[in-house]
Image: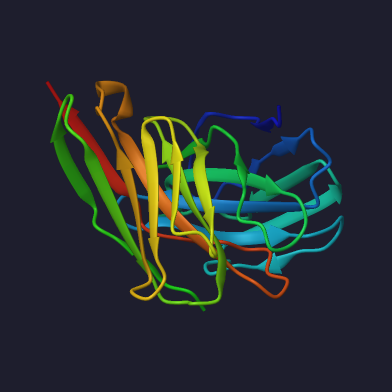
Length: 113
Length: 112
């Protein structure tokens, strides 16, 4: 079975701190995604990557950056956390094109104080 | 790009059928998906339907696709309390797309 592992389930950070959210998948998937989920807003795509060292902005990239140095790992970085980045962050992976079959991690709930 | 719309809430009694509806805008969507998110967890793929199909059944789940009206529905027969979750529909365009478009999710509440 495909496994997508997010390193932290719950984090509490202070405004201005740098935050790293790590995601690892074990099925050699080309594509990896970072979403944030907020009540009533559904999933919003932050960044995605379709290959190592490749990244593309999603719908809400402001305030975030990403890193994909290895195929299995996709990191989301908040350079200077702000309270409006308090949210649930979901990582996902998929294989190839023309597929909406994503495999999701359990999520990382970030609170910024 | 594609827009996908869902109602936000649905409440049903245990044992009844649930029908969750979704409308989409892009008629070139090749696959349409239903995901389930249980409390505190990520999304899991429940089922999908290819655009050349009208219906797909999988145990208690029935997916209906009306391409003319761009309407997708998920019917859950004999709904149980364990079916309480958020259900997302999603579609993907053909032509080499990587990114599915998700609806906002429908919270299904099953009460005794």
